[in-house]
Image (cartoon, rainbow, N blue to C red; front, side, top):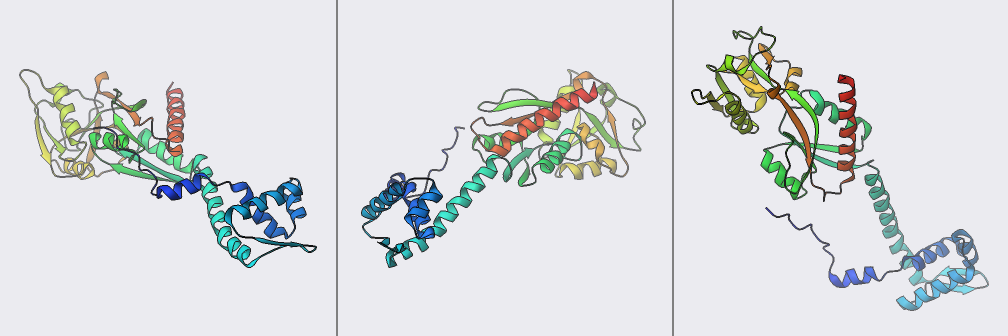
Amino acid sequence: MPDEEVPRTGLPIEDFEDIADLNCRPLKYVLVAAHAMSIRRAAEMLEVEPSSVSRAIRNFEDRIGVALFERGSFGVRLTDAGREFVEQTVPAVQQIYRAIQHAGAAGRVETGVLRVGVITTLAGGFLRELVEKYEAAYPGVRVDIRDGARQDHIHNIRTHTLDVAFFTGNGDVAGCDTLELWRERVHIAMPRSHRLSDRRQIDWPELRDELFIVSRREPGTEVRAYIVRRIADYSTYPLIESCAAHQETLMHMVALGKGITPVSEAWTDMNIRDLKLVPLSAAADIVPFSAVWSPKNDNPSRRRLISFAHDLAKKSDTDRK
C-alpha cells in the first residue's frame, strides 16, 4: 500500500502568503522600544545603532499604515493604536516562544510521544529492559505501547501512525529500516503435571503427539506457522487448536492442562501458578528480534530509541561474553 500524504497546513493560502512575507526584526524593535520607552535604550538592549531601530520602526509604521509611537523630547510613548497593537502582539509572541521552546525540547528528547508496536510480551527480557531504561533516561517522553498484528504494525509504520515496532525475524521490510537487536530461545509452555515438565530441555520429536493451543489473536497466526514449520513432515502434522483468548489467558489455559504452546524466553519472567516453561534444545529455536521503522519518520524520540537500543544490545552481547 503506498504511503499516505503527510497532512499539509490548514492555513488559507492568502494568510500563508502574509506569513511568508513577514519580517520579524521590526516587530522585535517595536516591542523592545515599547518596553524601554526610549529608542536609545532599546538600541542598547538590542546592541544596534539607535538609527537602525528608529528607521526600522518608521518603516514598519509606514507598512501597516498607523503610527505606533509618539516622538518628542520625552523620548517615545505608545499611541492608542500602538498600545492596542502591543497588547495583541505580546501574547502571540509569547506563544511562538513557547512553541520554539517545546520544539527544541522535543528535538533534545526532553518531551514528546513515542508510539511502539509489539507482538511479544513485556514480561521480561531485552524489550522490557529497553522500555524501562529508555523511560528512566527520558522521563518527559510518553511511550505509547500498542499490541497488534505484524502487517498492521508495518502499515502504521509506513503511514507514520506508529514510530517503531519490534518483531521476530530479521528480514527486510519494504520501505522500512530494520535492525536486529537480540535473540531469545523458544520455550514450550506446559502444565507442571506434564510428563516433560522436569526436563532441562526438550526437542520437537518428543512433542509429535501433543495438543498445541494458540490464540486466534496475534501473534497466534505466527505461532501456528512456527509449530508447523518445526514439527510437520510428510508423515506428521501437529494437532493445533485455536482459542479466542489473549496470550496471557492462553498461558493460564496451558497451566490448567488445556494443551501446550511455544513462547519466547521473555515469558520465563512471568510467574503463573502450575505453569512450567521448558527450553527447546535446537539452535534453530533461537529466534532473532528486530526493530522496524520508517526512514521517513523524523520523530527525535524514535531516533534516540534506536540509538539507545543499539547501545543496549552491544552491552548485552558484551555481558554474555
